Length: 203
Length: 203
Image 1 (tube, each protein chain N blue to C red):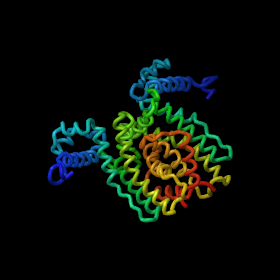
Image 2: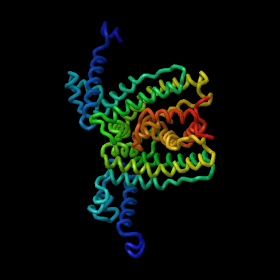
Image 3: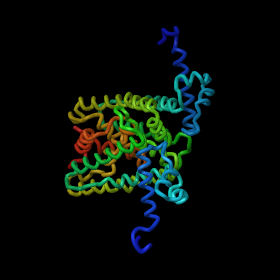
Image 4: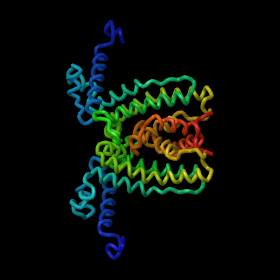
C-alpha cells in the first residue's frame, strides 16, 4: 500500500479510518435511530459525497462499523480450549452488551437487543447489506474455527467434532438469548454454556 | 368460557380467531413491509377499532400471528430423545423457512431472514412488543424444556444436564444461522447439530 503514495497509508484508507472512528462514536452515543450519515461526514471532516460513494446508505456504514468492532475482538490459543473459548465468548458478550445499549443508558431489566437487532433487520431487508454482514461473520468466525480445529488436532477435542456446528452452538446460544428470548448474557452463563457444549448431553 | 354466552366461544374469541387467520394469510402473501392492519380488518370483517383495541400496532398483531404459528408446532415425547429433538428442530426449521420467505418467492441463494429479523427488530424497538415476544418464547420453550427434563429423568440425558442451556445451543444454532451468518437450514444440518450437542466436543 505504501508504494501508492510513497509513505504511510493511502489517503482513502486514512479517510476511511477517520470516518469509521467518527461513525462508531456517534453510533454508541445516539443508537440506530438517531444516527446520521451527514453528521458523521461533518465530524470526520470529509465531504458527504466521499462518504456516500464508499457506503451508499446508513445501513452500509453501520455494518462497516460493526465489522471493525468485531475484528478488534482478540482470539487467543493457549492450549486450554475451555479457557480459550470462555475468554473469547466473554469478549463477544461484552461487545454484544455494548452494541445493544448503544444510544441509551444501561438500566436494570432492559433486555432490548437494540442495535444488534437493527443490524440483523438491515441485513434481511437489503441483499447487499446481507451479503456484507454474512461476509463479515464468515471472515470473523474463521478465526474462531481455526482455534477449534487446532484444539481438535492437538487432541483436546474429539477427532470427529465439527468446528462449524460447535461454534454455532456457542455463538448461537448467545445471539438467541439476545435476539429471541431476551435472557441476560453474563460470564456465569458463558461458563454453563461452555461446560454443556464440551461435555455433551447424552447420558 | 361457554357459560359466558350460553354456547360456543365468546364473541371476542371468535373475532380474534378470524383476525389472526386473516392476518396470517396476508402476512405470508405480502411479507412485513406490505402487511396492512386495515386490510386485515377488512378481510376478517371486523371494525378497525376492534382490531386496534386488541393490537395497538402492526408489530403487536404480527407478534400475535407468529405466536399462534409457534404454538401450532407439536412436541412429541417417545422416549427416544435424539429422534424427538430431531423431529422438533426440523419443525422449527420448516416454520422459520416459511416465515423468512413470507411475501416473496423462494429463489436459490436467497438467504434473507425476512420476517424473522423484522420481528426481532420490532421486539428490540418497542419494550411492550419485546415483552410479548419474550413471553411467547418463554411459554413455547417450556414445552421443549419439559421434554428435555423428562429425558433426563428417564436417564437418556446426563443427570447434570441443564435443559435451558442445551435448548439454547440447539435453537440458538438455528436462529444464529438464519439471523447472523446466513447459512442454510435443512434436515442435514439438524442431524449434525443434534449429534454434536448430545455427544459433546471434549475428547
